[in-house]
Length: 283
Ligand code: PAF
Image (cartoon, rainbow, N blue to C red):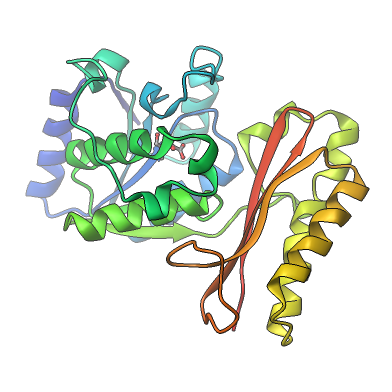
């Protein structure tokens, strides 16, 4: 496994692969890797001859009140996990390598109908930061396929929209949510849960599953379903529910009763930990 810090070195490796007509899969990450990330890598390996994983904590997607400096950086452990999977290249650019002219640079901005709601409602600059760095990484890696987790559902939709709108020559593959045995979606944030909070946390996935199953068996009263589930989560010990909504899975707008493609999206908080989860409805 090659660890590459400089763009010109990455370009040389990628060019050699392309000359040999090898396909390239790409998994962008901010490090602090867990089994969920590794499942994205395995999917990329199934799809492509070579796989690049980037590890870059992107300052542009942090809000001013979010602590970029405190984001966990665990590169030694991350590189051991990636080496165990025989990843071909880990790309670890520095902030000046990624943003040589600083953050005041050209920005990729996906329309606010998709980015101004849900996660974007409380984090107004977040998705511009994500789409800009992902666009830059796509231009750097020149992969055929990029794998994103369905866990960050809104992020996945934003990237799909950017790729479609800007005709980017890359296939975005969405990977299923990796879960612990009790259903809790794997996330770097789970490490911050106390033992008591960890016991409550899986109830979020149960709530989403119950809503999805109710809709699948014909209940189309989405408002009541989500209101009842929100109250239940609070009764079960969640400190707050930022949102719990049945949405159109493409537009992310609150779904009309006749919408055929649905996803239930939720964020609920235990102490200062925000847990994200979602579930597609099979119709
Ligand atoms: O999901 C993440 O880890 C980040 O938002 C991403 C896609 C690597 C961009 O920095």
